[in-house]
Image (cartoon, rainbow, N blue to C red):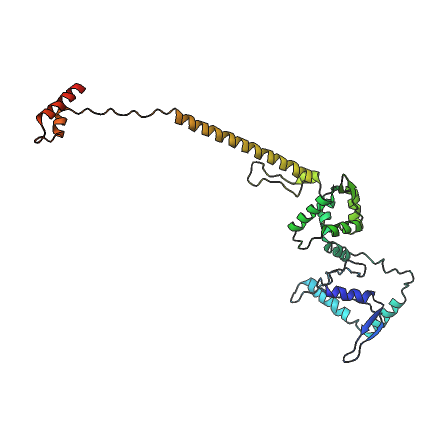
Length: 323
């Protein structure tokens, strides 16, 4: 980012500070013209008006250690070009440039090359990419409240790795800058922009790239096979449906869940009633009648030797009476 800031200062400042080695710095008029040649994406804000990005054709690229006919032809081409690097050719090129009429030249009317359009597409801010992929490419109307739109924006940032999303206040300012204003209705701030207006907005701010693809409900229904509702992977596909469809499906799932809970509770109560009824109607096991001791067992239970004969006779009489 420091490279971008320094180049911006050199491009816009009327004066420039110069300093020779071991010599005191001094200020001079800025007459710099800067040409940046790099294979790296080093300038982070080259989508602005200060940079003219030229398309470079790769068909003359020389690949080292390559013996293909095309590569050999490219080597011969650059060898011939190299022979033109002399003072005579340089003076002729300088004279040609000095003869170009620049009286009607306007710096802001720079050519919009494909490389410049690529730069616009790569440098979109988080709120711009959110609107582009959530509404513009879906050809959807922006009709919601400011709060709901911001929550949707935060969800988009979490899902796409945006570490520093805009605050709600900053997002409101950014939307006003691109022409999206809010209005008050029923004590709420709301936003309403038609799909056509969003398309014009995206084109005027160079949001659309040649690699972008538009899709709508009809095209997605024809090209995309929806998962089996009875399958394990069935869910709500947020790629091809709008917020109303998501809300409808969620309400259906919630209704099904409540019905299952009610059915589960009904079956639980029936099971408890069944268990209670079974416990109340189970007959108790009958007690086996006690076996009456025979006279012989009475005699065996007695001490035999030391017991009185009268007592023994009484026991026998009681036993006979019991029978």
